[in-house]
Image 1 (cartoon, rainbow, N blue to C red):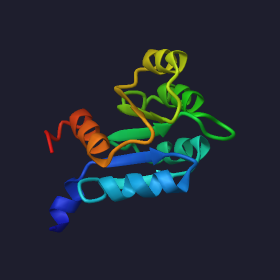
Image 2: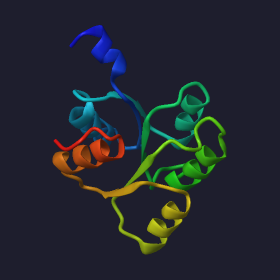
Image 3: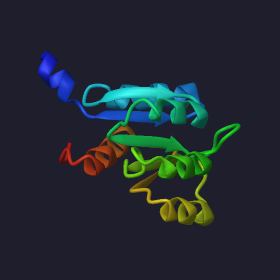
Image 4: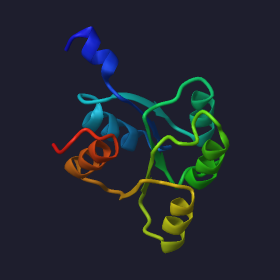
Length: 131
């Protein structure tokens, strides 16, 4: 891949407190996207003060600050408030889905997710076509 192609890759911020999930996301997406991984909502917010990725994959259940709280903070950040967000969770809860929807998520992926499903949803959100 040329430097130009590398530079043109869309950047995704993946936020999850489970290193196994972050490794899996990285394995699935690293060929098509530039991936930045952090293991907490607080680290995600620190990163977002410096950079604005093209997409955020955000786990809902995390220690200290969960994904909903993190997303509320992201939506308050002027430079980052319109970044598309796909929520990731191991628990299917109608209340959580509704709360996430109110905060403007563009998709919701249940764990465990298949590689094809995650890549398809990311591609759709980022307008990268079908794989």
